[in-house]
Amino acid sequence: MTSSADRPTGADIRRGPFRVGDKVQLTDPRGRMHTIVLKPGATFHTHKGFFRHEELIGRPEGWVVTNTADVEYLALRPLLSDYVLSMPRGAAVVYPKDAGQIVQMADIFPGARVVEAGVGSGALTMSLLRAVGDQGELHSIERREDFADIARGNVETFFGGPHPAWRLSIGDLSDVLPTVAEPGSVDRVVLDMLAPWENLDAVAEALVPGGVFLAYVATATQLSRLAEDLRVHGRFAEPVAWESMVRGWHLEGLAVRPQHRMVGHTGFLLTSRRLADGVVPPERKRRPQGTKPDADADAAWGEEELGQRPVSDKKLRRVRRDVAESAQAAAASAAAASAAEASRLPDAGPDVQRDVEPGVERGLEPGPVPGPDAAPERPAAD
Ligand SMILES: C[S@@+](CC[C@H](N)C(=O)[O-])C[C@H]1O[C@@H](n2cnc3c(N)ncnc32)[C@H](O)[C@@H]1O
Image (cartoon, rainbow, N blue to C red; front, side):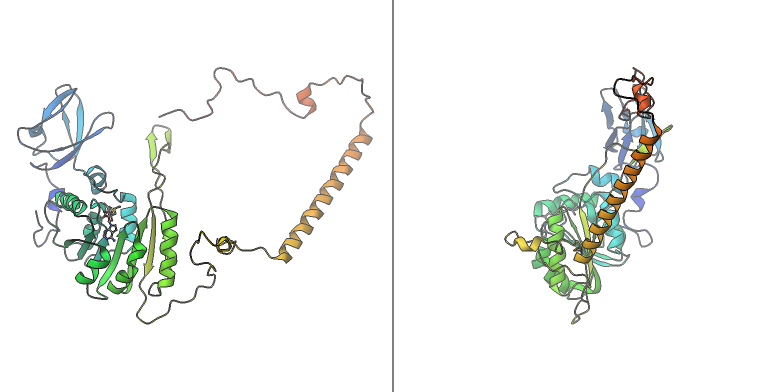
């Protein structure tokens, strides 16, 4: 369903009572999820009974349906973040936590002209389309036709039909982009691919001055290569990179704490702004000497190249002197303390039995003996 003039594409199918054709997410009493598409005459079966889809059609979202074995299911439409994690995939998808960062940090605004590559399964495409809105333009470029078909199916299922702001082209970004975008006409470029640095010329040509370039890469080596290539390119400002980690929380009674498991790594994000034509990027004050890691040049892996500030000889001399003085003072203090102790105690002699327990002699209380009720070392499982 495409939008009417006053309602954005896809908005209508996200509200109102359940209708035939809706995707519905069912959550059972143990928190397990199942997704169904509502069809007249169909049933949802598990080994513990079934219910007819008609029991949901016409009901409001958030309805609880009970099957023939008295198992209750909470019924909701999947959110975009649910949908991208359960939709069919060709390539790995951008996770919702990163898609949110991308929309925010690449400053994707309603009406923006955005280029995206590659498209993969179309997960990020949906967030970008929502952000540019019906009045914007998203041109997605994917070199693999099979992935492009999967992405198109996923996007059209989510929005209930074609999105008016979306164009999808098959081919390599650096070949396709110059044929579909006038130089200096694109507000934002978002790349999720193995070698984004191969496309910097095409991206610089398409972007407006001040336009945002954002790349999502999975490894630190890709991040390093991209950052160094952007610096030497000459048409981009100093890049900024970061990653985000999201840790869910377990909420049950007094057991309110971080979940034991989390997605530890997805990818790194990098942004850079397109400079105006003809300007030279301002020189960085603390620019590392090396440009790229070079396996053949051992010298490239020095302290400065790795961003470590070298310690001056003067500082080292001062630290050595301070450490020696501290050690001397500590030794003198220890000697004075043992001399004072020796003059205070009577000479007990080697064969005199002291009337104290060994632990007390060392200033220690005897510790509790761990019994069967001793607290476990690790937190109990959920
Ligand atoms: C990890 S997937 C993208 C996933 C996508 N962002 C999503 O959220 O579903 C990377 C895609 O980039 C495509 N690709 C790699 N290099 C490309 C290039 N130079 N031009 C166009 N597509 C490219 C690959 O075919 C692959 O489908």
